[in-house]
Image (cartoon, rainbow, N blue to C red; front, side, top):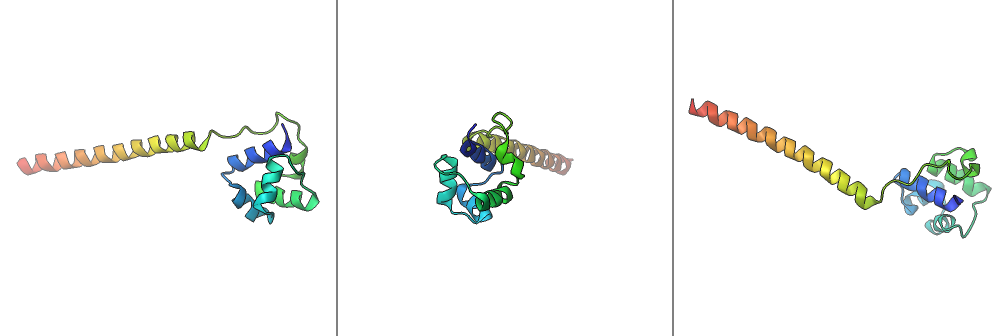
Length: 110
C-alpha cells in the first residue's frame, strides 16, 4: 500500500479531514492532498508534523503494506448506522413515555 493511501486511511480512522490534519500538522491542505495522492513525499519536518497529526510513531511511515489498518466504511454507511441507532434509542424513549402515560391514565380511571 502506498504511503498516500496509508495517510488517507489513518485520517479517516481518526475522523480527520484534510483541513483538520493540516491544522494539526502545520502543513497546508494542498500539501496534505499531494501526499495522499502520492504526488509528493513528506520531508523530515513534514513527517514530524504528520506523526503528531496522525498520532503515529516514526516507524509507521516505514511499515510494510498490509500492516496498516483498513479504511473505515464510507461516511454514508457510518451515518446510516448512527441514524439507526439514534432511531432505536428514540423509539425506546417513546415506548417508555407511552407506558408511563398509559399507567397514568389507568390510575386516573381507578
